[in-house]
Image (cartoon, rainbow, N blue to C red; front, side, top):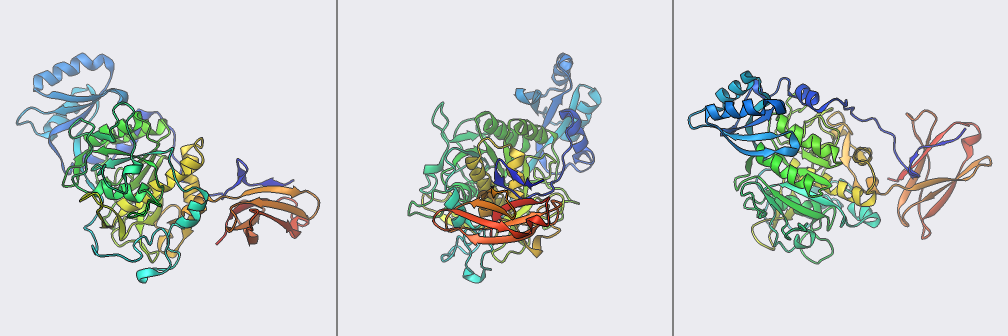
Length: 500
């Protein structure tokens, strides 16, 4: 009996993934909240809280309770179970208000409106010129390690743009007039605007901080336009969702509003390059609803140089299987000094140190930033290319494919789930493997990109794989090879993969 390890006829790598139990939403949120913010409130809005009503039949009682306390409901997320953003009466403390809500028996939960911050550090050398885009193609420039990169030129041979994919950058906004981003902006079919500003309630997500614009360039700066830089997924549609202020800080309530806007307006991928130490049920709820709609999330693992298995960082640490938590790597394939890590809580690493991209200071401004923010943006771009390539694939299937496509390196072993650094070429460049002849010895046919190198491996147990052969494809993009040992091993699994 012969088996070919393949999905949809394409060669794949078999990997184990972190399991996520499926339980009712309310119970899942409750379990996630245990040991959370109640014991350590952290920085939060001084006179605003988030409240989830318990049941519809409690609505009138909750209204009376709130009227008696002089609070005002500023907003309601009707699609998130009626989640409320509540402004407290003058002189009322957040801790007293939350305690009163919990004692009332009228709410499922009440929590502070926590402060979250952009995950970044100060720019590096502003005159960094030669070899700046090392993470796309690293040939050893400026002290780098050759091939410590995403293998983007080879990946772009397979899929060079993601014009059908909408990536929401939930951050500080985007400079919509930037020369390298104008061609990649999403436009609202209702009014032609590029996104949403939760701080104003309008569709004016102008970037007065710069963080969001830098991420936008990493994800989807226009390539081959003889200007500036190139994004991982050129011409993906960038949806600007602003909730961080000019200082790079914002509240969970506004982040939730942006996530809801992105979900309801067709975003396929959401980039979350910010966070904090406090778990929010409201945030978890919003992301779970996005998960139900098939939205992928790339999230920064945090810049605290901490093991997030022990010291969680949110929202990257929320245990939902559509969220990819990303640590930052360097041009020498080391862990960036300040990057969080975790064998169970960080999924993979991606380039995040000294990343040169678009800035919000002007329409032709560029500069360097470092952090897990930039690493998450690399992953968001990679997911956009995968979504462009396979629009009908399940979100988890695309994530599994991404995690299987890492370059394993000692610096990442035991520090993330995948044990390596993202390689986009390996994710998008999967060859087609088919049986050419059943007569002994077996002959196989592999199809791929001309000029690209591929290899074929076999296994008897789907655990131990042994490379049988490798080749660089000629102009036909076809390669036939013979498995001389197939008569000795009648039960074998085969897979094709990008070669080294």
